[in-house]
Image 1: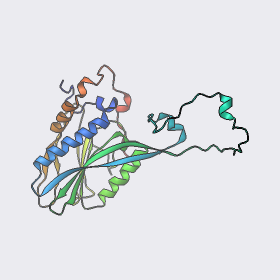
Image 2: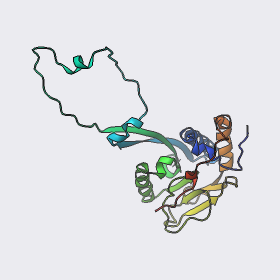
Image 3: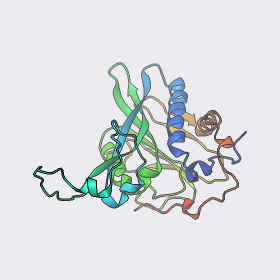
Image 4: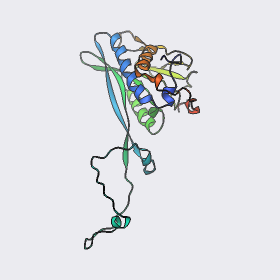
Length: 251
């Protein structure tokens, strides 16, 4: 079944398909990119794992994980609370645990210059965790670190919800954005913008000077991802889009 929207299907965001979509999109983006790169470049997928320290009150929201060993035996409440005769006991102190939850594994693309395999550009597809706390702070730390290096940074924001990446001026009108930060033109940033009613654009991917940009049709990448993910048969299109799909400006 084809996509019901001219461009991004917003139900991917609102119905929880984004982790799967993110991984597939980055993979096909890398394939399309690699086919267009000159011989002295390569595109590779890397990943990072985001861990968030959870307060005790949020522990009940963690998905249940099967333990390595289970010991099961019925005892009465009295038996559980009473130590065997003649056995000395200590009175325990109850203290909440600090639990780290693996939020998600996020993939991104690196463009390397051969043969020395020097990093030229990093290509990111934003996730909801990059746009809301506590994950937003961690992503912004990486974002600013990359901007301090002599590499290009390309960031796709195909999500309507959450906070946008910070810019010195307001974003142009649109629902979705592609930010192209060229290492030789900072602090200027090229911002491609389009709406829900428009198809995804073709955007430039900068390489090492004097090599020209290569142009990637994001609509092609999205179409491949959407079709091979078979999202149309899983999405509940009878459900309305939540109001939370409206984005808030970055700080």
